[in-house]
Amino acid sequence: MAHIDRAFRSNIKLRHLQLLVALDEFRHLGRTAEFLSVSQPAVSKVLAEVEKMLGMTLFTRSTRGTEPTPAGESLVRFARSVLAQYDVTRDEIEAVASGAAGRVRVGSMGATLPVLLAQAVSCLKERAPRATVLVEEGDLTHLLPRLRLSELDLIVGRLEPAYAAPDLVTEPLYDEPMVAIAVPGHPLAQQAAVSWADLAQHPLVMPPPWASLRVKIEQAFFRHGQQPPADIMESSSYLAVTTFVAQRHAAGFVARSVGRQLQAEGRFQVLAMDVEVELPPVGLITLRERRLPPGVVELAACLRQTARRIAGAGAAPKVRDKTRKPGSKAANPS
Picture: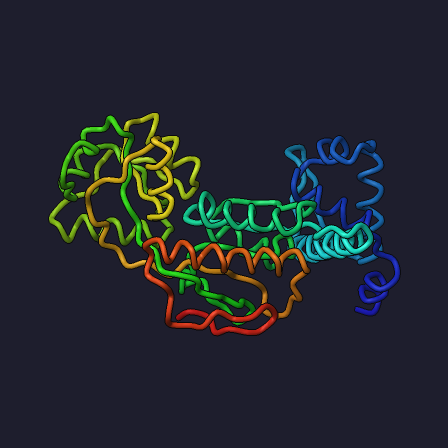
C-alpha cells in the first residue's frame, strides 16, 4: 500500500478532505456543489482525483445520490479529524496573536446546560470577554463521537459508566438528583404530595428509550405498582422537555438545580415528590491524549467553581474522586 502512504503524505490536500466531508454530509453531488459554491462537474473531478490517488472507490453514485464505501467511511473519519484539528490550531494561533482566549467547543447534556454550563460561560466571559463558546446539546451517543473527532473540546454532563473508555478522562464534580416539574397551573403542582400513581395519570416527557435514565424511571413506576403513562413524549433535549411540559400540560424530569431555577423564574413548579432513581455524577469528559487549549482550561476552571456553588446550594458534594488539575489523568467511573 505504498501508493496510499504516498497519497497521504504528499498529495491529499485540505480541499480534498473538505469535499469528502461535505459529500458525506449531503450524500448528493449537486447539494455538495451548492454548499461548496462550485459546479457539480468540479465536485466529480475532485472526487475522481482522490479516488485515483488511492486506487479505490470512496463513494458509490446512483440516481438517489452518493453513499460512502467502507474505505470512504474510513477516509471521511480521517478528514473530519484533520479538519477539526486544523480549526483548533488556527483558533489557537489567532488567539495568541490577538490576545483573546480563542474558541471553546463544548458538548452539553440537558442536565447541565441551563445552570452549570450557563453560569460557567458567564464566569469565562468575565475572565476573557473575547472568548467564543460553541455549545452543542445532546446525549453521549451524539456527543462522544464528536469529541473523538476533535469537533468538541469538552463534554459536560452525567458520567454514565456504560460510556467509560480508556481514551477518555472523566472528572466527577458533584452528585445531583432529578426532580419532576410541571407548569404552575397543573393539577399536580397544587398537591402537597405527589405519588408515582398520580404521575401515571398525566402526560409525561421521558428520556429516549436507549437512555439509562429511561430504564430507571420505568423501574421506579414498577416498584410502586404502576405502569408508566401511555401518553409520553421522548427527548433528552432540555428545550424539548421544557417545551412539551409547558405546551402539552405534561410533567417532566430535570436536574434539581435546573428545576429550582425554572421555579425561581416562575415558569415551572417542582413537584412535591422524591424521584427515587440512582444517577451517575455530573462531571467533565475530555480525551486522554489531547492537550487542552487555554480557553478550554479556563472554562473547565469555571465549571469547577460553578459546580462547588451548585453543590453547596443543595446537591451532595462528590467525594469519591478528587478533582484533577488540568492536564492530569483521572480514573474513569465504573
